[in-house]
Every structure is written in C-alpha cells, then in structure tokens.
Image (cartoon, rainbow, N blue to C red; front, side, top):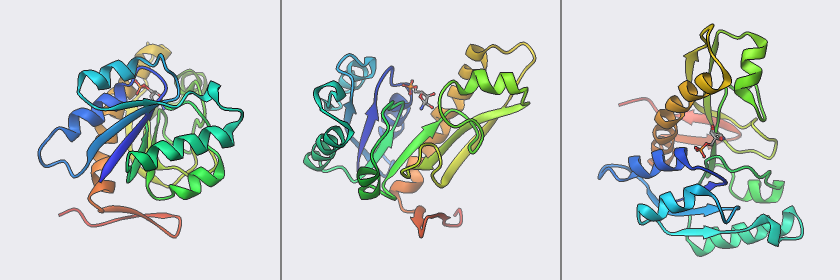
Length: 202
Ligand code: GRF
C-alpha cells in the first residue's frame, strides 16, 4: 500500500516511518508527506529522503469542510491507500474521517483513554501517574478515542520534567508507530465492526 503521512511540525514520527519503510521487507511505501503548514520542519526532512511533499494550507481554506475536501483531493491524487497522522494538529471532520475509516491511524503521546488532547506530559506529571506512554489507534470522528492498535509504557521518574518524560515517551513512539503501520499495511491488524482485529503472531 501507498501511505500518506500527515504532519504539522518537526516530523520525528514521520522520520521513524520513512526509515522503517526503507527496509526491503516493509509492507508499505511512504508515498507522500502532506503538511497543513507551509513552514513545517518535517517537509525539508522528508525532501532530504526523496519523499514527495505537498502542502494543504489550512489558512487558505474557508472552513474545516473546505480544508478536508482539499486534503482528500490530494490523497486521492497521490493514490494513498493508508493515512498516518504524525503530529498533525488539525481536527478532521466526520465525513473525512468516515471516508478513511480503517485506513487512517494516529499516534498519541499518552496511554489512551487517559490524557486525550494536548499537554499530555504536563498533565501526567500533575496527576502523579507512575506509568505513562503512547498509543497508536485507528482514527474515528471523536479525537483520541479510536480503537487501539498498539501501546508502549514508560516509567515516570521523580525527577521528571515534561521534557524528560516527553523524550522517554517519544523514543517509544518511534518504535510502535512503524510497528503498528507494518501490521495494518500487511493486513494483520484490521478494523472490523468498530473493533481492532489482530491476527495471531506467526
Ligand atoms: C508526538 O508527540 C505525537 O505523539 C503527537 O505530536 C507529536 C509530534 O511530534 N501527536 P513529531 O512531529 O512526530 O516529532
């Protein structure tokens, strides 16, 4: 399958997908990187890896529906089969999400269903949780709620700041996002009737 990676910023998760997909046995190709911000640092990083890039500037569209229609048109033009949200900081409309249901995944920097939304590391520290982590899930219309594909946990240490904790989580994001994409791309993980079905590991 052809994968489109959607970004808004630095693109470290995007890089982990590009690097994993460079392996000869990886079951998917990173066909295009799309940013909603023309100045996203990740665009230059993708170009340096010879991955085609596109920008769909949300500021150039009147509303979310118009932006999502433009985004969908680019995905169709690029013949994307799967979509990976990787630090993509726009809410997507329900019709767009429903069109890509079962074919669009996201990485979230917390152990869902805890800490949906922003500033997850600050909030984890404020709550005093001892375990934190990250989640790859199928995207559904409600933000950070979709069926869970894969998670990784990290310890929270007494000396942690949001930065040190965030770095520990990010290192795990870079492990599980390519692993989850591999499973979706080769069909071992699927969304069926709103639930994740995982084939036996062989
Ligand atoms: C990551 O923490 C990801 O989980 C969240 O946004 C951040 C993006 O970082 N959705 P990067 O652009 O992949 O470096």
